[in-house]
Length: 74
Image (cartoon, rainbow, N blue to C red; front, side):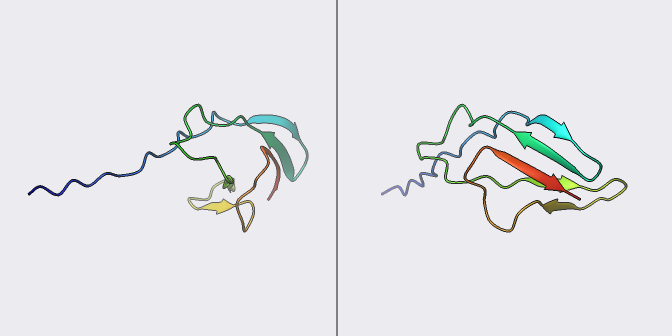
């Protein structure tokens, strides 16, 4: 008897975001859904940013974003 492990398909990453506008301390981004969703609907996006001269990425929001645009401050 063989055990076969089937892993679920993983969605593709969305295309790089479009920068809609930039202000002194913020930017507004929007993006499109990934081409492949891995067989399940996309339920949210994590948006991350990195401050200049930092090695660490930070999440722009505490919870996943359901819409495909975001204002990032920092």
